[in-house]
Structure formats: structure tokens, C-alpha cells
Length: 174
Image 1 (tube, rainbow, N blue to C red):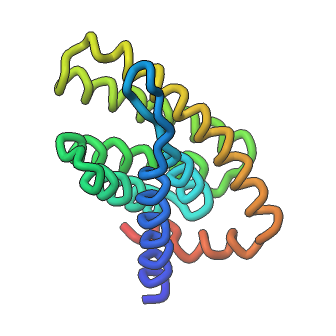
Image 2 (cartoon, rainbow, N blue to C red):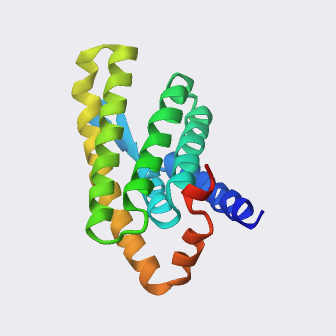
């Protein structure tokens, strides 16, 4: 019971923060595109609280942001891509800090870039990739830098966070 309540609370916090960060858009006027900070939150939640909280906050938070922004065509793709991104980052980094965090973020970023490249080709055709992929790469680069900074400082200043991660160990949830 305690584990499920802890997971529920941390996932709800992750969903809300991912939703808000995904709505803070940084426009790229020359190509009428934008990037956002939602991936930063997904990475932070995944690194701090593990794969389940990362997957739930990524999938639901990003999908709700797409719904709120009127981008309904992206909802199924965001649900799967962002959910997998959060899960993979949390799973690779689980129980290991330092270099494994960077590897996990890199793999999660590749998954997100590749997933949205495929989604873009399905929805709009391959020529649109010229706009989509560079923006996704920039978004992931910013997310990696910010999330490493945030996670390192949270772990340093609030060591109790490590105990919270233990209460939602994913192996015990499945």
C-alpha cells in the first residue's frame, strides 16, 4: 500500500510538471516551429524516481499538453514515445548514478528523436523531417544539460530523495 501511494504521488507530481513544462514553448520563428522543456522534467523524474514514475509522467503529461494545445494528432505518438522515453531513462539509470545517467539520457533522447521522426513521416511525409529533427535534437540537448544540472543539485542538497526512489522500485510494482 505504501509503495503504491508513493508511486501515485510522485507520478502525479511528474505529470503536472511535465504538462506545465511542455506548455512553456520557445518559438523558432523562421520555421514556425517550437521546442519546450517537457523532456527536461521527464528526464529529472525518471532519474530521481525510476522508470514507472518517468513513464507515467512522460506519457500522460505530454499527452495532456498536446490535448491542451490542440495538437490532438500527436497524442497517441506522445503517449507511446514520451512514455518509453521516461521508462528507458529510469530503467537504465536505476541504482546507478554518474556516467549511467548520461548514457540513459542519451538513449532516451535517441528514442525520442527517432520516435518523432517516424511519427512525422507517418503524418506529413519525409520532407518535414528537415524541420522536425533539428528542433528535437536541440530540445534534447537542452534537456540533457538542464536535467543533469537539476538532478545533481537535488541529489546533493536533498539526499532523502534516494530513499523515495527505493519506495517505488519498479521490480516490486510489476
